[in-house]
Length: 186
Image (cartoon, rainbow, N blue to C red; front, side):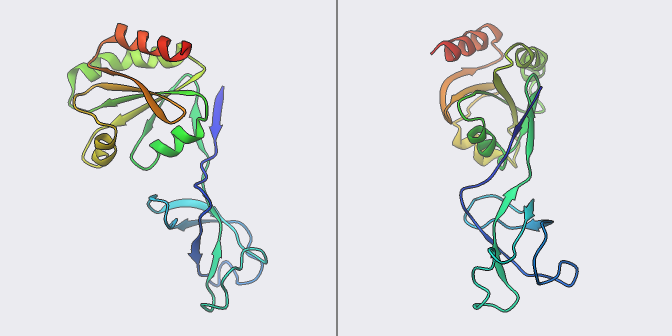
């Protein structure tokens, strides 16, 4: 059963300059590359629309409009492990709402990470009421790994209401299982 999470940053806008292909009057929704300002999110594909209500500052710059942009829907399937990165992690955690989120922080070269990966997948299939994520702690995701305080891999973080409530370091399946159960009951 897929759980569809709509990622929409807090109210934000970006500048969109119409071209001949989109037309300057009555913008239809278009799939457009956009830079979302003040959100910390890199350029993403979004559904952007404008029109009468979207024209907020046309007097400031000819042909430039401020319009809303929300990121595409991210499908997080219950019963599966979803790979995240520094750009998608927090939006997915926030979109999960009151669901418990379990994060596996690993690296490609880590032997114990590879050993526990199939067991982690089994946990995602067993606990259908939780969201299971994986983060490759490579150079690209280093800022997020640092923010989350990772020191060894694998490290498992259990989040409730966007806050870390439990942590398990090392490939300790029984400890991870106990932490999940404690988070569910607490």
